[in-house]
Length: 297
Image 1: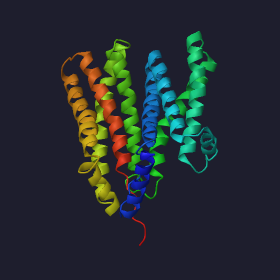
Image 2 (image 1 turned 180 degrees about the horizontal axis):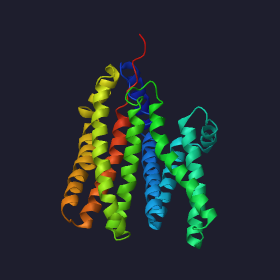
Image 3 (image 1 turned 180 degrees about the vertical axis):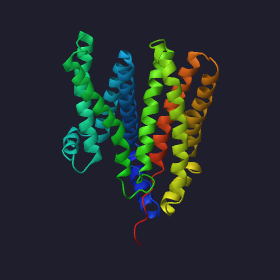
Image 4 (image 1 turned 120 degrees about the horizontal axis):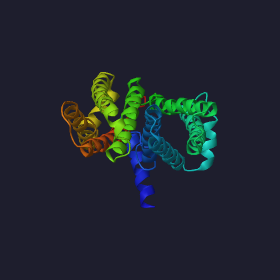
């Protein structure tokens, strides 16, 4: 009862404010949506890298992460019947398109893993199933940013830079998962291939975040307020500690050292873990800092 009263009070306060925060996707049950997007993007990218590097454990982990993300999506919706309503709006809803992609991926990924277990994955049917799974995984990586960018009333989200950020962060998260597996001794051959990719993605996302914030500063008063919320307000701690320090600074520093001298694989695994925490943090920060344009007077 107290929680309901607090939520009601928050909504009343929001409407009295000129710049209202978007709470449905950033607080309470909305945290499940943030977690779902993080898990599905990470898992799908992990599946893509694992297929390219022929890492069976990576395929399994990627599939499990997408499955966990799909479950988080369902819990976010609250009622199962909402799922069926969502999935029937393919022509108009990015959420619906995402559900369709996840459903297709789950089906073909299970089929491919079964063929892999039976040793039948190298044949024609196995290659076709793998190809479909890769297309579905690419779709999962692509769609999430467009879910947020389609929110026209929230300038911080309504920009082509958000899909670009989500794609870059999904790819680096997928690479980070495989680096952690390699650091644990399950695929050392992939570690040398992934190190420069992970460093390049970390630097690229750092540049993207900087460009994103600078563009948003000049995109109107509401977007500027959102940037201030992220850099100076209630989202500053997770941004600087999570997104910046853990997600960008530490992985870039460790990755740079790894290119010049040999360092323990455990340290690379730790950098990958910090990177994943940073990836989750930036998704949370962008969601939490979203503000609606002021209502007409």
